[in-house]
Length: 385
Image (tube, rainbow, N blue to C red; front, side):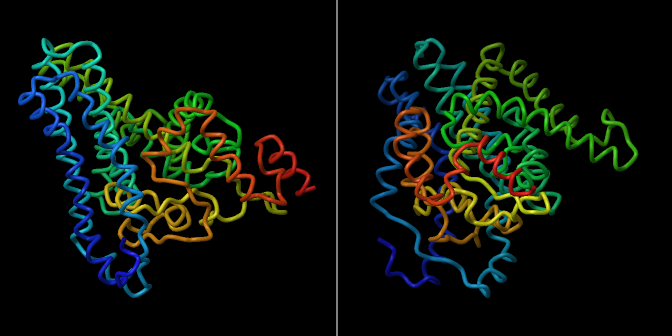
């Protein structure tokens, strides 16, 4: 649809389309309006989920892919423009408003909701919070600007997953697509085998990395300068605030939304690096991370709502690049659809393997030893002998 537009026009159009994230933030309110007008509380509790997972993938393919990559000159100019930073920073207060509104509806409409409706409302608000807190938080924690960096920390703390701020930047970006990385899924590994491992090791690794940072400064792990203590304190305060303001139902809502949000994060981690490995060099180190070590998806509509998260290949090759200047690489491994469709596919392992395994095998044709972590480790060791 947009393939004939000049890149400069496309980039200007995208600067406005990034406002889609605030359309996502509006979805719970829209669902609440529909509940009141129709009286169908249980049906519209699922409304945001329906739009994101049923309607969006179809519209994504109708709209098509994004043909525009910024030039080097545009990268330099766009990286300095305040508009793009403001769009992401304003998501921080928006996330807290969405959480409070969702809890209020959950409690206010408890007589109208059946158990199925309550589950739908928690999952709907959870996926919206994942897009706001998890996705935008990911963009902000990579920034050196204190307002942006701390804003990212607040977003992750708002869904009880503050360790990601530390582990992602200092852990995942160092060990991505290697056997050491808990966020890189292996060829043949199901989502349900991946998730428990990711929950556990990403939490533990965050504390390990922060303890190492403090140790280099001559400080103990349990010190007031341990940022994880502060971010977890924010999560605890959030629990207390929701329990105080909305009662035990408010706490149930908050914990359910948090679980949905950080589980969505790990599902997307599973999608982004499935089956991809970095080669081990003769010096015992892994090759530099390149666009070949992450799955890429260039569907325009989802990329606008996710601040170019789907251009994940460029993000890992150049992690300090701001979202607005991330580029698409045709030579990167390509997903067959956007993240919403891949999310659903990952939930059904037989379908996931049927779609993704041939793509991994085709990408590593001639280097089939890379298709399992065990073979990968053995071959890497043999290569260094």
